[in-house]
Image 1: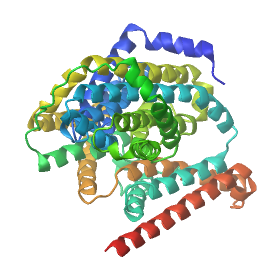
Image 2: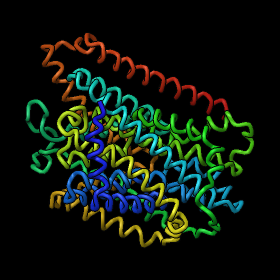
Image 3: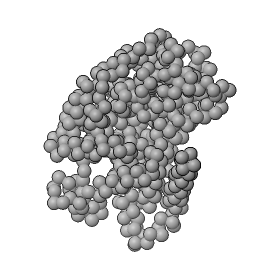
Image 4: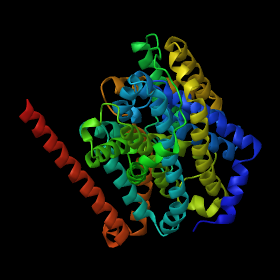
Length: 499
């Protein structure tokens, strides 16, 4: 259960001078990265992980949480002002945000987006604080069969819910599973797929791989499409919304919060899905659905609130079960690991102080971007005028420095470069990158727990059906796969009929 004393201590820790400073810096950096089209919160987190190694776990995790929450919000700035989503999650914000800016309501759109994101983020952070200890205490009853089944469920959802093509998602996930097999066998301890290289005995370095897939790949892609940044021409007047404007949208915000946190808990769905579902439901229940897409403020509120409401949901399975909700939380999971903190129910038992500090950090990070966003929205808009030709070399430089700085190992730089090229090719040919990262984590989790389960049962695979929780989770995995196949078949038939 939630320990209020530890939570109070967590707030004292987070609000201390150095930690509060890194949260503010992380918030500013996250908003800037989110606002720049093509750059994402996931990329920023991957890039900053090596630089947090010298900070200590509390300051490092607090800064990354600030970058994460602020980066999701920041994508809406570009969507509203230049009709180009700063992040994939902000695609839905374009629909009504940009028309509002064209009507001279850019300030109002930015204000509603900021407050909606802040309320959604705070709601999800409070839900995380309240429900994570309950889920973790339940997960302490899990043994190897349950964790294996959980990993299989995560893999099933990851493959089926990512991208328009389940086949491409499966290919990407298969690549992640193969990467997870490189290194020492988790049970026997003998080397696998190392090809005689001592550098591969410990497996592929996870953080340099993330830097390559999310940072360098984007730099390669920006080189291909690089052009001078589109100039912001919209006039930004009053940003801070009036109380009356917020009261009008109170039910939209509440519905978006509930949709966001629910979608966030489900692996691989993330803020993009939450924003789309919230927008669609708000439009469906509106008295004036024909106004959506023409500058309807409720559309901006619905999308932005749900985006940030999904963040706490994404963190929930990662911190309690060790199963990341999306690519960003997979990267956060890597950050915890390099600080010798293993996400999962044992983290609550062995490091309750750190867990409650994370809860406090999540709440403060959302408050931070709410206030900084309202005060500085018109200044962050100027970042969109930065020439992208100056940005790409900086991404390259910091990516390579970060990859090397983690272990002072030149081979990590090669890992980052190789996976940067792989990530670039995957983006170019429309293969989702997230399944590869999630499958590497979940694949290692599934394999080790599968073999431990067989050791527990003297080789009898029926152990997975004899344990009710494991059996129920496996049934959910099968249902998720069947539902995805049926959905894909139905979509294919619709496309064929339309053609």
